Image 1 (spheres, rainbow, N blue to C red):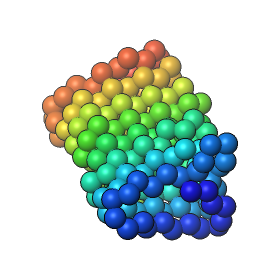
Image 2 (image 1 turned 90 degrees about the horizontal axis):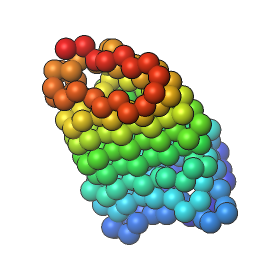
Image 3 (image 1 turned 30 degrees about the horizontal axis):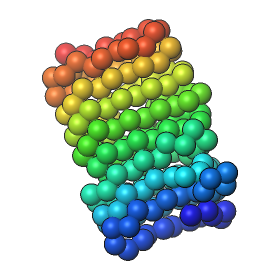
Length: 182
């Protein structure tokens, strides 16, 4: 589905997957809200949103892995969640993944924007960036977090026991690593 509008809201019925963008065609919006009760959300072409992008599916997956994706900020709620952006990723608190979650910033950093609540990851979380990764006290994870970045990976605001279910993160990147508190 290709679109070019100021604000776009999509809410398909049923379990059919929703594919955003198309090969060699970019879908653009000022703000984008995509909600599917049970279907998965993916993209065939880049999706560019200058403002807020929100993706929610009850039991489906969110698989937005085009390296040309760009969101001002991104909120998600789904089973398995994979989000790739060309530049910085600004994850919005209040997001959740019941399965594994992967976030990949091709040429930028990963941060969290506080809009109330926490980001809940019920399984593993993989954060990959070409810059820095900063995870403030706005994330709750039941599985192990893995961080890969050449810049600083700062988890100092997190509690290992309280926020990360006692599971120490895995740092596979170069650069400074600031571990969570006990």
